[in-house]
Image (cartoon, rainbow, N blue to C red):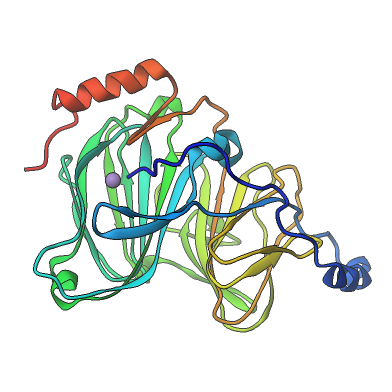
Length: 322
Ligand code: MN
């Protein structure tokens, strides 16, 4: 769903440089082939709120912050680890539509069950990802699974919205259930990556995407620095799910649940420093460079297309849940 957060209450360069670390860095700089990619900004998340009665999320970013800076990504909601008691009813979000983009749900703890009007659906558990292309329109529901509701337990999810280019917005909906075991593991020294979409070196993630995108998460198994090559000119976003990260030539801090944006014009390697146990989500994608008109559950290129989406939903043209 969509967080009703207005305005752009973000603070560029919110976090001061760590001069001491910067000095240490300059000592080692001459031995490195390239300097680390610069961070352009670090942004705090919005306030915590309920989505339906099943997802207690912080909206980490949303299109109104700066749609072109985030492109092709639109929105990120993080439901941090939270314990749910056993329940006779299934919590979640009831029937609602989407058009013009994709919703990508990452399960880290607990189970969600999705059902949509295009016949897609299924259950995803810890480590799994559901990549739903709403495109021309689906109506769906997102709920805790029956089994999880009955037994209760820890629940942690991320939902990412990925924009579609104008010529794909009215294409056929698609549903990709991606299981944890399908994701290649990439050894990045002090951290291990789980590759969901796109490429790291020779490894390739299983998700099919409509535009060039690389998505992976990282777990640090010891304290230190890891480095990954990502395409120059792409949008590159870093979201620490748990634990603080620092990045850039001056080791700027990206606190847990904030997000960092790398400089699109810098071709340096993306370097991240963190403690053992830190978990990070990395999103990289080729910017679409098209107008973004986002309204509630619809993301199109013009106001007229948003009005059309409302008409089409109300007249049942996006289908119904049976
Ligand atoms: Mn939805």
